[in-house]
Image (tube, chains in turn brown, blue):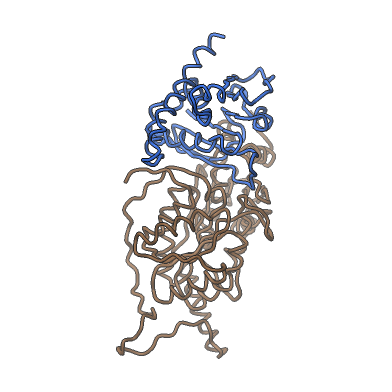
Length: 354
Length: 183
């Protein structure tokens, strides 16, 4: 097919279709509306179903219903709309249903604005809805990576019977970049024996529910869920590093911010500053290993985020006092510039000594 | 080569399409490209702009704050971006509508009466392509042929009759460069 120039939101949609997602329930909201529009046009072409729900709450519950039949299903929104989906997401976790939920994050809190932000990090990585749970969260930094991670999001969802969140920001959703849709790697996935597709008289009825009124039984279910989360932590960590081997300072950034940070790092390297990058790709499970490997030899880490400082808490947990952890962030939809990050590097490292 | 461009003007002047064409053409030539629109709560008659990066390597940040080139199509865009062009960079302004002249001595400045020239071609809407032609004539970031090739791919079949006037506008813009060079 070769390379095509597409918007990030459209790439998420096309990648989902190519991953076998045939059902989409959503409600438009800037800056992710192109995703909804693309699905409306595209899904009928592949024999799928697109439905614009009356609200985000309705959409996530339609996802719940479709997921119960074992089909690949997705919904997407941006921050305020994503908040509305939390109850449904908690139900998906409690009922162990696979689905992909996209959050193209915008400035908050409240109605906020429509500019890029990463300030939903706590919400996506620490629960968001009620109950004890974690959800795998994937954060692509480029449009090509969206293709790969959207596909993986569906596989992870099916493998562990869990919702998976794909988190981008307004910039990633709105930008255009060349992408190539290659052959998908079909992975070995468990059969969906739990799906409620009708018994046809050949077995007992199947029940999908998150309700369990017996306290001991619900605790047992929680133990089972925790074991699953532990397996995900074991197997689904993803990250990328750049020039950390000789680095004195390491910037930690994810998504589009990591790309801006990369420019700042290259500039600093030209000036002789030894700086590297750790880019978490899975935000939960958070990649601890690259910190364990570097925390006793680097002088410090700088978390850079489009928030007032959320991921930096996971960085501090991973570094656990072995090195200094600094932070630089912009909020409200303001995107940190390469120059600002570079200046932060200079101030943290004490500047360039020649 | 790393070219970081900001193109800005009124909504409707075709600044977004200019950026997309450069990105598309760059992709056809095998370069690393990105296009990022400003997508704030824009209003009719307000300014719109986009960041375009064309590079020999994969693109790092798609967000351009200090452009190597700014192409401004109206006064508000001139006000906003003239001072942001990095030293040694290039400012192209549509002097049919931009009434201020830049006082900067550390950048190249190209002024083109693009809207008037487009009017001479019989279609004021191709003013953007005249500016694009001048930009490419000066910097050679991508070829005009690649732009035409991109137009063929981007425009639906029923709009292909517009390719000719776009081509004329591109060439007219590119032909301004030697003239400017002599002055």
